[in-house]
Length: 124
Image (cartoon, rainbow, N blue to C red; front, top):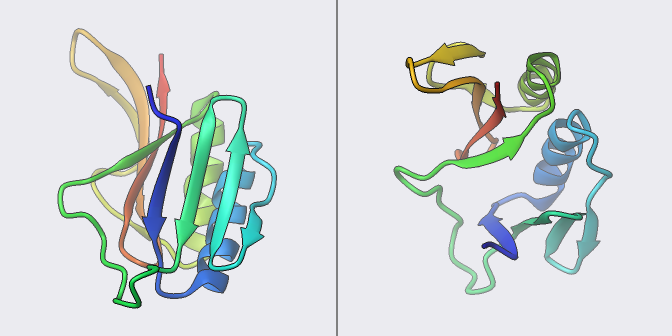
């Protein structure tokens, strides 16, 4: 359904450091910088972080979350730890398995250094 997701940053170098670490924990290669953006390309889609081209400050989406697939709870924990070590902040409930009766999944939530809400998810 999606070809790519792009979010904004106010500090590209900081974003590259954060996303190289967190996405690296999921097995995704370091991003490729193209002028004012960084791209993380995978067989299933592209994630990008960009300085706003209109020159205005980047702001996080209120109510928005971007989810990254992980292969196991352990990989999700590594993703979360990498995010905390590189300027992210934890949000929502602590990382762990959620069981609502119909669905069981592992979830870990962070806010990146620009305040964007992201998560790692593994459907069990």
